Length: 287
Ligand SMILES: Nc1nc2c(ncn2[C@@H]2O[C@H](COP(=O)(O)OP(=O)(O)O)[C@@H](O)[C@H]2O)c(=O)[nH]1
Ligand SMILES: [Mg+2]
Ligand SMILES: [Zn+2]
View: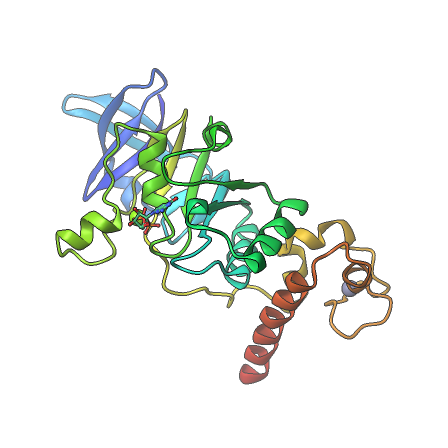
């Protein structure tokens, strides 16, 4: 049978079966020598006397390493309006990395009940006019469109620690009691209480709640590829005069034209340039 890995605790794999039931599986010896399964993997399993045995991992559509999840359909960038502060630079960087992994980014703006500054409101509206789906939420009044985007998909929540990821999941699934920061502080367990390697059944889909990340790693992206990872640039890719255009100083650049006529927000382009310069500096360092 084919089953989905939804949780891994040491050598025990929790498998979600076709009929919605769960069963524990272990690896057939030969699987171990290759790549072990991660959450999100579809595996071929067979019944054994002591439960299910995982025979083989089916080919992956994509693979994230932090968190370790395969076959991810979309990633929701969770960003609060305050506490921690709203950061377009962070949204743009995370969104580049998500698209580079072959995954669709969405933006969820949390804590809207805490009041939105004029500057932040302008920035949010820029995203709302752009190509990324944006959902605003406030504790206690969850937007139903969030549940509908999760339906039937594997979703990763990503964003700074304290942005409200666990709170969102608890509100989406009232049977959940994921530790939020208030609780974990009270228990003195520090900030990172969220468990890795688990996909939670939420709103008819599967969701990975991830801890806040510590670093953004652009080392595998080249200057040439970077523009393709910027979702706002998509309509202009391939339309520049030079086909190796990095949309920096080149004449006849369709991206720069779109920035000048206001089709791409200036801040999005500036964030792109700062990542590009970082990649270019890194190259120089190793030449
Ligand atoms: N006022 C308000 N507080 C929120 C909201 N979402 C989360 N919080 C609070 O923000 C803190 C961090 O939330 P948490 O879900 O643990 O963030 P995580 O680290 O991203 O999982 C907690 O104290 C939550 O109660 C919201 O929409 N409004
Ligand atoms: Mg959390
Ligand atoms: Zn260009």
